[in-house]
Length: 309
Image 1 (spheres, rainbow, N blue to C red):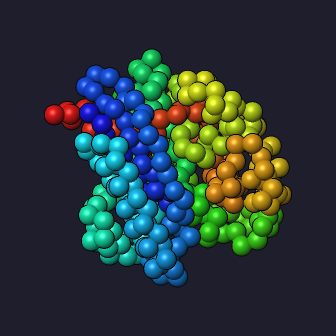
Image 2: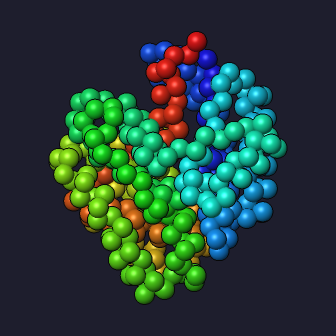
């Protein structure tokens, strides 16, 4: 059965089509996305503005048409942090449904963390033992840990790379003072969640998921995406600290010239790196393995578990 996952995130609208069967791994057939940056379309009251609403509707309509062209027997549309936290969330959801016929399911932060954890567990298997997972999106940071498929603890914090860039940085490159203040803010926001995660026990495997972590790993020497998903990629705390000192002095245009950094995300990679470094430090993690599966795969796997009939 061909399944479609429509992921409306803070940075992009992303459609993935896979062929799925009970007991088998999902086989990717098509991958399409378009830049959105919804967190940059929040007004002073925290509501998504009219330009953001129109961009969202256009992107969802395009994704719906493509899913139909690809023959997706089931389309699973969902939205994450940017819409979840918007002051006019319900009005935006209603508008999208009226114009496209697609009703987006808004995932809670905890469900986002749980589904991402499921994907990581399935990728590494039971032999990985206790897994601690970190995922940095455009709008939020998810943290989870567990020894089974359901995490013992799961948290979602408004520490996404795009959100923090929009809220904190008004110069390019960011002012050193602003970087230091933001680092202190991130540390304070992580205290409660990191304490709860560490209370669950020492992890056997620490993992990073999301485009932000893949980019950071690439910038510190990990293999490029062209090497395939099964190549082991890691991100170390010392390497990350050195990277922050380097990229925080560069303009977004200069960062976009670095191998592995897209122009769409070059402006927010500094904030993403600060969140990654702070989270690893708060959890006492010196190294992360980068997992190619994340939230979208978790949604697909949960759907397969429920049956494809």
